[in-house]
Length: 472
Image (cartoon, rainbow, N blue to C red; front, side, top):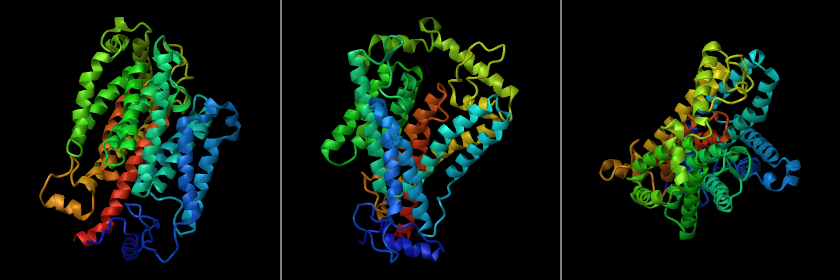
């Protein structure tokens, strides 16, 4: 039987009949050369866009300039992003396409940015809001658009996930070593990130470990070279240990929620995953440091919180809610909750420590609606991709006509799309739980997970569209 998954020539003919021209692919799902389209291979700007995305991700995660300060003057992240954006623009325009594909998520991101711009004239500090928009959100938006456009085939999705897992594993391994050596510790015994950026403090470090840990676990159980699988599982162990060593309460709650969803989502795809998680739980709990349990007990017992952060977070959430009620439409301005200092504030010069409340207080309802919609889009894209790949939002059928239809589309048991849809929902659940304890609405973490969900959905939909004529 002829293999039709990502058969580019057939895909081009289908698209012609639908009145549109698809982007050419140079390889199919298995990595073999695809049939020529008659219009040439992928132009070099498109390759530049992908390489720029990869380079930016590596720099954003590893942050070599933090380890070697002379690299700061090279602005590696900015250069990679510029190269990627230019490659995307010229690559698509050279094929007669628009600058970017259009998805509900990209539209929501633009609306989210528009809400920020609308509120700037009414901001508590307009100049500060402009700085947050240009220095943070614009970069997030551009890289998100780059990822959605360039992760357009299984091989690239696999490469991106491996890169993220390797980078997160490197940070986790350094954190474990730092904890063992007694360096980079805060509040006495909490390990912090060895680099800045999205790993700069214990809570952010734990957040990122929680979000990307499902990919390390699932990729470790995929069929493939034993060395790569072993490396992924070793990375997962380091990430799990890092979460414990951060003593992050929000990270720990996110970890519990994430592991529970991962066990449920993976039992049909890889039954070994939930069994392994149970084994690690039985073996790992007795080895957990006593100080970890003391800090976790402060979630329920305020007397165990020596730092007073538990009460401070409660006060900040109340203050954030009051700020939203006082400025319900446009908020007090992007990034301005930390600067907002009315007379009755108890926790001045601090953030909300809650992502939805952060957006509500700073951007009002105008910004909260697209932000909440983006969160919904993440779960919706994950569910849609899972239903496309497995035939059901709950998992692959074990036998019968539905299973045979999936085989007609060439879903392999260890297919990268199957692995991705297995890890996506647990990842997003972990982020959502952690987001209730951190002002992380503009952190890179969520938008990377969202981009992976959107890319997985689009690749799976394209694959089904190509295979449907043959399957019928």
